[in-house]
Image (spheres, rainbow, N blue to C red):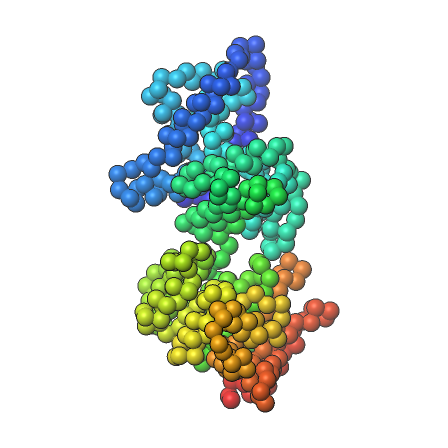
Length: 440
């Protein structure tokens, strides 16, 4: 399906001259009857269309894509609305529904359209996120957040879009449940919050940006995430099955790097991945590989802790945990210490120096009696063997630092292999430290 987006607002602007010619013929439209008709069509559209479960699932996906602005999906849903109105024998006189050329277009705009967000989608190239906070609209382009010159006129417009998105995904957002998440098969993720949970309604659309980028390409233009020598280092680290921890701010490229490192793993290896959302799309890009992808949720039956327990029974050679959280830290540490060498994860930490302590703190939260020093030693030796820190620098994602961890004399030691000097805008490479660590 094409990713070119159809804009109702742009279409209407093109039609404005035609409509203005017929102003003397325009008749008033009852707002009550129009709203009722919109409600009826909304309920009609939300019913899954198709005979098989696959057909119904595809239809639901098309509805969501239509709301998010995908061109072919919009044409398809507009055709359904037109057909439904024709079957109901409702007048389609194009001059009765200003400023819309047809009643179908008017209804489509009300129950499908994204309002000013559609213009934002057309205005910006390489969109990674659209962030709506109340009336204001921000975008993320190449990792940089910027405020747009567009905004909504009324909060009700944001709430209408929220209701459209959740309705077509069999979810709700109301006073009892003040948030919702929508995930598309192409990886786009929509997060919604309402009054009472946030001070104003919010809407975040995060587009699928994790591309199939080879590790070698990440050192070249236009990415330049690392110097070429580090590509060889990382390949050796993966081949020698060191356990890796990656840190970095949001949109700094952690998932892209994880995916590039997974590609370097032997084709025959059995790998289990655990993600909150399937952003890496490994089975899509590597359909023949022996990879099990877990998509975890926040409920107790399908959380990351349960996924890790099941994964350990599925004979994985490596476990790729997209992000360690408090409740699953212990079991991930256990997996790394019991034979799953070459595993990788990310954690929330400000600096690589903090990583072992952060993981230990998460492990201690389950209130089991543990020897803190012994646990810190295990984490250092078996979980955080190699640490990689990513950062955004002038709109570019870079590897800011790579370290090797060592437990010595009862404390954690860090050996810097690579660091990025922002003032000189270049990397400082310590190849002798890398070789020494590799040959230990």
